[in-house]
Image (cartoon, rainbow, N blue to C red; front, side, top):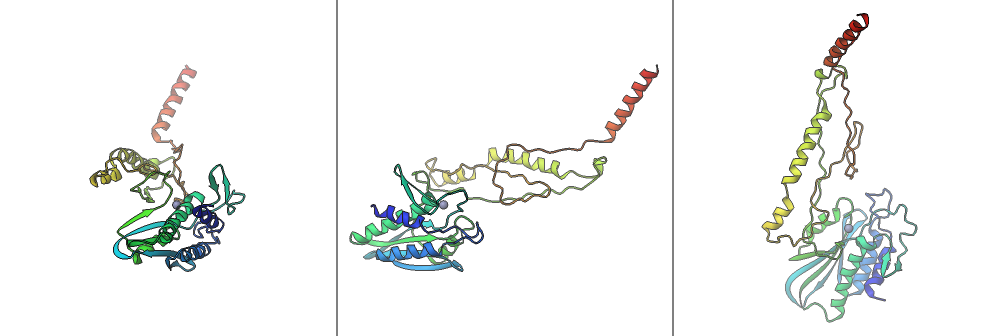
Length: 289
Ligand SMILES: [Zn+2]
């Protein structure tokens, strides 16, 4: 069997669910040991680096015969959870595809980059420079593995083997959680002028986002400046994504473009009351007349 596929199946077989996503989950220690052993067997120099207790990055290096530029391959070894999967750690090959937790994201990329080092190592070694195979923890949560990695390892160029539908991506939009809170002033529903409706203030913010979305193309602008034109594949586009929270709500952990945003206004102001009285008087007059 293809050695990369063999390694991929082995990696899928090791539970490496991110414990920051799923409390009590296995974490990356076991899969890190499997990877370290595989890379040592290929003749790479292997080091580990604890990004957190029990959560080690594994870094293998292949030195060239003469000094030169360095290339890093980087991939993460944690996965998301497995709820609703029947046999997540049993790799199954069907119709030319391999199934199992992490088969795509991204144990396949990790297996491929490690196997690339094996092929070089077994065909006479690296002529010049240095190849760094960086396997990092915690990409699915806070990327503490990547943060730790860059404090110790540098390279002239890097390839991250995350799946991008077999197209080369040269940029990522990144992500931000932005919490916006509008502050109003509570008042009784029958006396709205005594207060300030925080939801109506939020409406202005949301309206502003609509305008901003049409105008800001920061990533596209940056790429144009760098001379990439539109050759870059930008994953997931470059759009704003607004999540609603209710009054008692939890702003974090919701990553959903809401289909419906509803605000309920309690409209009972004095103008209505005056009109109503006038209407009643009119009706009374008509009735009496
Ligand atoms: Zn990934």
